[in-house]
Image 1 (tube, rainbow, N blue to C red):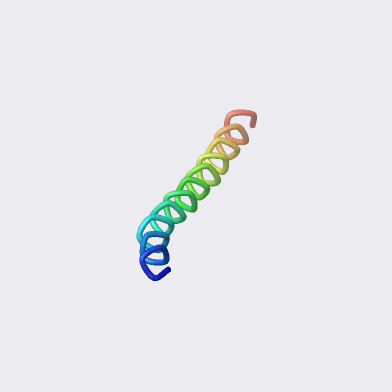
Image 2 (spheres, one colour; image 1 turned 120 degrees about the vertical axis):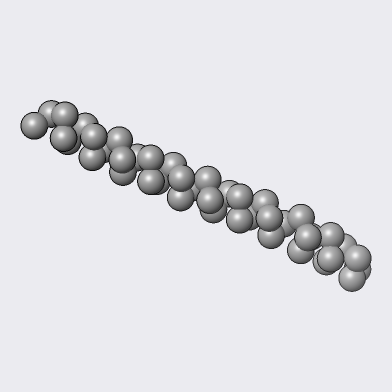
Length: 42
């Protein structure tokens, strides 16, 4: 059981962080695109 927890903590945390980073990246890119669209349309 302890080995399983170690396994999960070793592999789940980096995956979770990567997922969060990807979400942040998408959010940031959406903001940038929206800003560009606004600046181009005016």
